[in-house]
Image (cartoon, rainbow, N blue to C red; front, side, top):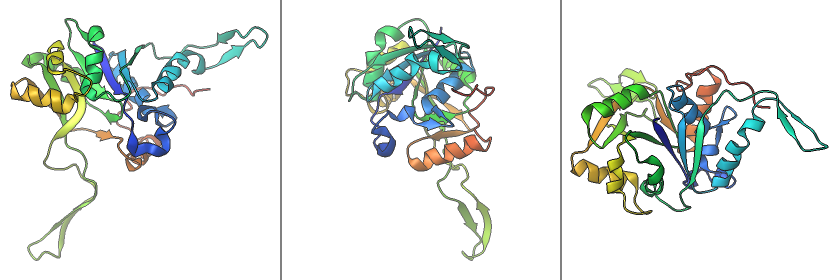
Length: 266
Protein backbone atom coordinates (compact mmCIF):
# COMPACT_ATOMS: atom_id res chain seq x y z
CA UNK A 1 0.00 0.00 0.00
CA UNK A 2 1.44 3.37 -1.05
CA UNK A 3 2.24 5.56 1.94
CA UNK A 4 1.75 9.32 2.14
CA UNK A 5 4.04 11.39 4.38
CA UNK A 6 2.79 14.82 5.42
CA UNK A 7 5.22 17.17 7.14
CA UNK A 8 3.18 18.86 9.86
CA UNK A 9 5.65 19.71 12.62
CA UNK A 10 6.89 23.23 11.85
CA UNK A 11 6.32 26.36 13.95
CA UNK A 12 4.35 28.35 11.35
CA UNK A 13 5.77 31.62 12.63
CA UNK A 14 4.13 33.73 9.90
CA UNK A 15 0.75 32.75 11.36
CA UNK A 16 1.52 33.71 14.95
CA UNK A 17 -2.06 34.96 15.42
CA UNK A 18 -3.28 31.37 14.98
CA UNK A 19 -0.26 29.17 15.65
CA UNK A 20 -0.03 30.27 19.26
CA UNK A 21 -2.69 27.63 19.92
CA UNK A 22 -2.36 25.15 17.05
CA UNK A 23 0.13 23.99 14.43
CA UNK A 24 -0.13 25.58 11.00
CA UNK A 25 -1.63 22.49 9.28
CA UNK A 26 -4.60 22.75 11.66
CA UNK A 27 -5.57 26.23 10.45
CA UNK A 28 -9.01 25.79 8.94
CA UNK A 29 -10.45 26.42 5.50
CA UNK A 30 -14.19 26.05 5.25
CA UNK A 31 -14.33 24.61 8.76
CA UNK A 32 -11.72 21.89 8.15
CA UNK A 33 -7.96 21.99 8.77
CA UNK A 34 -5.83 22.46 5.66
CA UNK A 35 -4.25 19.14 6.68
CA UNK A 36 -7.66 17.49 6.23
CA UNK A 37 -8.01 19.06 2.76
CA UNK A 38 -4.64 17.63 1.71
CA UNK A 39 -5.52 14.18 3.03
CA UNK A 40 -8.95 14.28 1.44
CA UNK A 41 -7.35 15.04 -1.92
CA UNK A 42 -4.89 12.15 -1.68
CA UNK A 43 -7.66 9.80 -0.58
CA UNK A 44 -9.66 10.55 -3.73
CA UNK A 45 -6.84 8.79 -5.59
CA UNK A 46 -7.09 5.90 -3.08
CA UNK A 47 -3.87 6.94 -1.31
CA UNK A 48 -5.17 6.92 2.25
CA UNK A 49 -2.39 5.41 4.35
CA UNK A 50 -1.03 8.55 6.01
CA UNK A 51 2.09 9.15 8.08
CA UNK A 52 1.84 12.55 9.73
CA UNK A 53 5.16 13.95 10.99
CA UNK A 54 4.20 15.91 14.08
CA UNK A 55 6.26 18.31 16.16
CA UNK A 56 5.13 21.76 17.29
CA UNK A 57 1.80 21.37 19.12
CA UNK A 58 1.49 17.85 17.76
CA UNK A 59 -0.99 17.07 20.53
CA UNK A 60 -3.57 19.20 18.69
CA UNK A 61 -3.27 16.99 15.61
CA UNK A 62 -3.37 13.83 17.70
CA UNK A 63 -6.46 14.99 19.58
CA UNK A 64 -8.21 15.91 16.33
CA UNK A 65 -7.77 12.46 14.83
CA UNK A 66 -8.27 10.42 17.98
CA UNK A 67 -11.61 12.18 18.45
CA UNK A 68 -12.49 12.23 14.77
CA UNK A 69 -14.81 9.25 14.86
CA UNK A 70 -16.81 10.69 17.74
CA UNK A 71 -17.05 14.26 16.51
CA UNK A 72 -17.99 13.51 12.90
CA UNK A 73 -21.75 13.11 12.70
CA UNK A 74 -24.35 12.48 15.38
CA UNK A 75 -23.70 10.82 18.73
CA UNK A 76 -25.61 9.90 21.86
CA UNK A 77 -23.96 10.38 25.26
CA UNK A 78 -25.27 8.43 28.24
CA UNK A 79 -24.50 10.84 31.05
CA UNK A 80 -25.09 8.17 33.68
CA UNK A 81 -22.37 5.88 32.36
CA UNK A 82 -20.32 8.11 30.10
CA UNK A 83 -20.88 5.73 27.20
CA UNK A 84 -20.91 7.30 23.73
CA UNK A 85 -22.84 5.80 20.85
CA UNK A 86 -22.14 6.91 17.30
CA UNK A 87 -25.20 7.22 15.10
CA UNK A 88 -23.00 7.42 12.02
CA UNK A 89 -19.47 6.73 10.92
CA UNK A 90 -17.26 9.21 9.07
CA UNK A 91 -16.94 8.72 5.31
CA UNK A 92 -13.15 8.74 5.68
CA UNK A 93 -11.74 5.26 6.17
CA UNK A 94 -8.15 6.41 6.38
CA UNK A 95 -5.25 4.92 8.32
CA UNK A 96 -3.56 7.83 10.11
CA UNK A 97 -0.17 7.23 11.73
CA UNK A 98 0.77 10.15 13.97
CA UNK A 99 4.54 10.05 14.35
CA UNK A 100 6.29 12.36 16.81
CA UNK A 101 9.37 13.73 15.00
CA UNK A 102 10.64 16.39 17.40
CA UNK A 103 10.04 20.04 18.07
CA UNK A 104 12.89 21.63 16.11
CA UNK A 105 13.61 18.86 13.59
CA UNK A 106 14.05 19.99 9.98
CA UNK A 107 12.03 18.60 7.06
CA UNK A 108 14.57 15.97 6.08
CA UNK A 109 15.11 14.97 9.67
CA UNK A 110 11.38 14.38 10.08
CA UNK A 111 11.40 11.98 7.15
CA UNK A 112 14.50 10.27 8.53
CA UNK A 113 12.78 9.71 11.87
CA UNK A 114 10.03 7.77 10.05
CA UNK A 115 12.46 5.53 8.19
CA UNK A 116 11.44 2.31 9.94
CA UNK A 117 7.82 2.84 8.88
CA UNK A 118 8.62 3.87 5.32
CA UNK A 119 11.17 1.33 4.20
CA UNK A 120 9.77 -1.23 1.80
CA UNK A 121 9.49 -2.17 -1.85
CA UNK A 122 7.24 0.73 -2.89
CA UNK A 123 8.01 4.42 -3.32
CA UNK A 124 6.15 6.83 -1.07
CA UNK A 125 4.59 10.27 -1.45
CA UNK A 126 5.68 13.20 0.67
CA UNK A 127 4.27 16.70 0.91
CA UNK A 128 4.05 19.70 3.19
CA UNK A 129 1.11 20.35 5.50
CA UNK A 130 0.25 23.73 3.99
CA UNK A 131 -0.05 23.35 0.21
CA UNK A 132 -3.05 22.62 -2.02
CA UNK A 133 -3.07 21.67 -5.70
CA UNK A 134 -4.91 19.62 -8.29
CA UNK A 135 -1.89 17.54 -9.24
CA UNK A 136 -2.71 14.27 -11.00
CA UNK A 137 -1.23 12.00 -8.33
CA UNK A 138 -1.58 8.85 -10.41
CA UNK A 139 0.35 10.46 -13.27
CA UNK A 140 2.95 11.73 -10.79
CA UNK A 141 3.49 8.24 -9.38
CA UNK A 142 3.66 6.64 -12.82
CA UNK A 143 6.16 9.26 -13.98
CA UNK A 144 8.31 8.50 -10.95
CA UNK A 145 8.24 4.77 -11.60
CA UNK A 146 9.03 5.27 -15.28
CA UNK A 147 12.35 7.10 -14.85
CA UNK A 148 13.86 4.90 -12.14
CA UNK A 149 15.51 7.72 -10.21
CA UNK A 150 15.49 8.16 -6.42
CA UNK A 151 13.25 11.23 -6.26
CA UNK A 152 10.63 13.20 -8.14
CA UNK A 153 9.62 16.76 -7.30
CA UNK A 154 6.50 18.42 -8.65
CA UNK A 155 7.47 21.66 -10.37
CA UNK A 156 4.89 24.45 -10.47
CA UNK A 157 4.67 27.99 -11.75
CA UNK A 158 2.95 30.05 -9.05
CA UNK A 159 0.55 32.88 -9.86
CA UNK A 160 2.07 36.32 -9.95
CA UNK A 161 1.29 38.36 -6.85
CA UNK A 162 0.15 41.39 -8.85
CA UNK A 163 -1.47 42.07 -12.20
CA UNK A 164 0.84 42.27 -15.22
CA UNK A 165 0.69 45.23 -17.62
CA UNK A 166 2.24 45.20 -21.10
CA UNK A 167 3.03 48.47 -22.91
CA UNK A 168 3.55 49.41 -26.54
CA UNK A 169 6.81 50.94 -27.79
CA UNK A 170 5.91 54.36 -26.40
CA UNK A 171 5.93 52.94 -22.90
CA UNK A 172 2.60 54.53 -21.96
CA UNK A 173 -0.16 52.87 -24.00
CA UNK A 174 -1.33 49.63 -22.38
CA UNK A 175 -1.41 46.69 -24.80
CA UNK A 176 -2.63 44.07 -22.32
CA UNK A 177 -3.57 43.69 -18.68
CA UNK A 178 -3.64 40.30 -16.96
CA UNK A 179 -4.88 40.16 -13.39
CA UNK A 180 -2.51 37.91 -11.43
CA UNK A 181 -1.60 35.52 -14.27
CA UNK A 182 0.53 32.46 -13.76
CA UNK A 183 4.16 33.47 -14.07
CA UNK A 184 5.48 32.70 -17.53
CA UNK A 185 8.89 31.56 -16.32
CA UNK A 186 10.48 30.28 -13.19
CA UNK A 187 9.49 26.83 -11.95
CA UNK A 188 9.54 26.24 -8.19
CA UNK A 189 9.22 23.33 -5.79
CA UNK A 190 5.50 22.57 -5.50
CA UNK A 191 5.92 20.25 -2.55
CA UNK A 192 4.44 17.03 -3.93
CA UNK A 193 7.27 14.48 -3.93
CA UNK A 194 7.73 10.80 -4.61
CA UNK A 195 10.75 9.11 -3.02
CA UNK A 196 12.36 5.71 -3.16
CA UNK A 197 13.84 4.41 0.07
CA UNK A 198 17.34 5.42 -1.09
CA UNK A 199 16.35 8.93 0.03
CA UNK A 200 17.44 7.89 3.52
CA UNK A 201 21.04 7.64 2.30
CA UNK A 202 20.97 11.43 1.84
CA UNK A 203 19.44 12.42 5.17
CA UNK A 204 21.82 12.07 8.10
CA UNK A 205 20.35 13.88 11.12
CA UNK A 206 17.57 16.05 12.52
CA UNK A 207 19.16 19.24 11.19
CA UNK A 208 18.97 18.13 7.55
CA UNK A 209 16.38 19.88 5.41
CA UNK A 210 14.95 17.78 2.61
CA UNK A 211 15.37 20.70 0.21
CA UNK A 212 18.93 21.78 0.99
CA UNK A 213 20.58 18.66 2.35
CA UNK A 214 18.53 16.08 0.47
CA UNK A 215 17.46 17.29 -2.94
CA UNK A 216 20.56 19.36 -3.71
CA UNK A 217 22.76 16.31 -3.11
CA UNK A 218 20.43 14.11 -5.12
CA UNK A 219 20.64 16.57 -8.02
CA UNK A 220 24.42 16.36 -7.87
CA UNK A 221 24.13 12.60 -8.30
CA UNK A 222 21.68 12.95 -11.20
CA UNK A 223 18.88 11.27 -9.23
CA UNK A 224 16.15 13.96 -9.22
CA UNK A 225 13.45 14.33 -11.86
CA UNK A 226 10.70 16.97 -12.14
CA UNK A 227 7.03 16.39 -12.85
CA UNK A 228 5.66 19.60 -14.35
CA UNK A 229 2.25 20.68 -13.10
CA UNK A 230 0.56 23.49 -15.03
CA UNK A 231 -2.68 23.48 -13.03
CA UNK A 232 -3.78 24.92 -9.71
CA UNK A 233 -1.27 25.22 -6.89
CA UNK A 234 -1.24 27.43 -3.81
CA UNK A 235 0.66 27.26 -0.54
CA UNK A 236 -0.62 28.92 2.62
CA UNK A 237 2.38 30.91 3.79
CA UNK A 238 0.60 34.08 4.89
CA UNK A 239 -2.77 35.40 6.01
CA UNK A 240 -3.20 36.76 2.49
CA UNK A 241 -2.86 33.19 1.14
CA UNK A 242 -5.42 31.91 3.63
CA UNK A 243 -7.92 34.60 2.60
CA UNK A 244 -7.39 33.67 -1.05
CA UNK A 245 -7.96 29.96 -0.37
CA UNK A 246 -11.04 30.72 1.74
CA UNK A 247 -12.46 32.76 -1.13
CA UNK A 248 -11.81 29.87 -3.50
CA UNK A 249 -13.65 27.52 -1.14
CA UNK A 250 -16.59 29.84 -0.54
CA UNK A 251 -17.06 30.65 -4.24
CA UNK A 252 -16.86 27.09 -5.58
CA UNK A 253 -13.43 27.73 -7.08
CA UNK A 254 -11.53 25.30 -4.87
CA UNK A 255 -9.91 23.29 -7.66
CA UNK A 256 -8.43 20.84 -5.16
CA UNK A 257 -11.95 19.85 -4.02
CA UNK A 258 -12.60 16.79 -6.19
CA UNK A 259 -14.78 14.96 -3.66
CA UNK A 260 -18.48 15.07 -2.90
CA UNK A 261 -19.58 17.34 -0.09
CA UNK A 262 -18.69 16.18 3.36
CA UNK A 263 -21.51 15.95 5.93
CA UNK A 264 -21.61 18.88 8.32
CA UNK A 265 -19.59 18.36 11.46
CA UNK A 266 -21.77 18.37 14.56
